[in-house]
Length: 302
Figure (cartoon, rainbow, N blue to C red):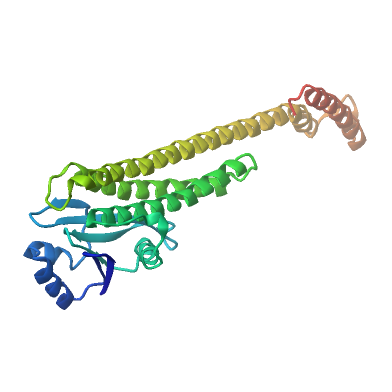
């Protein structure tokens, strides 16, 4: 457990993988309901924002990239916000919270002057949103790479890559939707921990959540466009192969027909057909087929 004095009268308490005895002590310190204290033991399945008499209980979900599964998975930050303190609980080490701690300890001027836990909570959620946007930029770079390779005849590789990107965007959007719902609940709910001067921070949280939604929507449209274009190119190439095979079949048909007939035993008068006569006639048919092929090629059909 770490305790950080962010400003006079403002404390940030942070736990990673909380122990039962730590939660019991915090339950007594923050006067938490038994059900809330119990929920802090393990991750929650959904985001939430619950306004209690003396504190605000938040469950925030963060999209995290899983190299093993090649998609986004869900991380979680549970928050208890009072007028004097912000308690955060995570079940693994999370980069956004480490980033915020470094900024606070380093007196990062971009944080501004934090004079309330509402502003500290805003800084926390903003840091999480910035992290989420960086995650989405990696997805955007992958989509741009797909767009650059789409005309280089890598159909099989691209189909697999597009499938992975679609799954990642879907998983990311599910997590982001839960986050947006929680943020909207913060903005519309009533409670005693938000001062009138902090209302602007609640509104800003909603606006920042909308930025993520907009980017997700744009990435979904782009990857679907690439997928449709790849499908059209695949259909065109398939049609082209079929067309060429049809022309080749048309051109070789005279040779096959002649060979089939000529190879049958036959006698012309008293003269038995010799191999020389067969190959001579075959050469004439072959020349005729060659002339047809040249005409087809000149017209762009081959």
